[in-house]
Image (cartoon, rainbow, N blue to C red; front, side):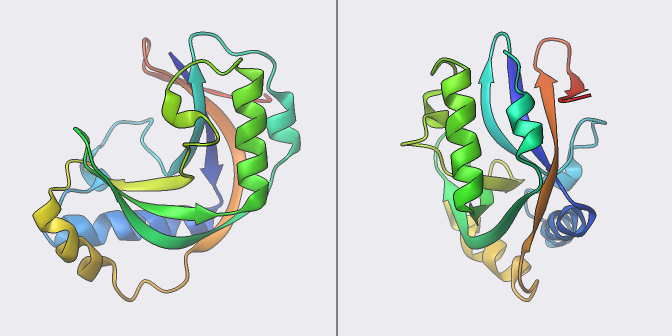
Length: 163
């Protein structure tokens, strides 16, 4: 499976990494503990076994975004994330969904998709208040999505899109 992801500008990347650091410092789950070379703040737009030409994604960059809320996704992964507000991001994601032929994770269907940047996995419900407190005071979370890549889950490698 290959993903389609957008990457953050340096300021937004640093803000997300500071959130990761704060969570880890508080003894909470955090993506800061994922030390893999491919781990970096990103927004996943979709995924498929093979990718068509996605040049339109790169041409849509940069995409301005802002975090409008901290959200928690239930389920086996228990994700804490910043939900992103951006009509441009939603339009680009919907175009990716159409280009992929509507295949892949049904959560990437534009009707179900929640634009977000993940902060932690395996957050238990009883840790949610602690997560909120650890992130309190970070200020406005906004920036640009400036690059596109694909992560191959089979080979665990990334490829820059539009290169």
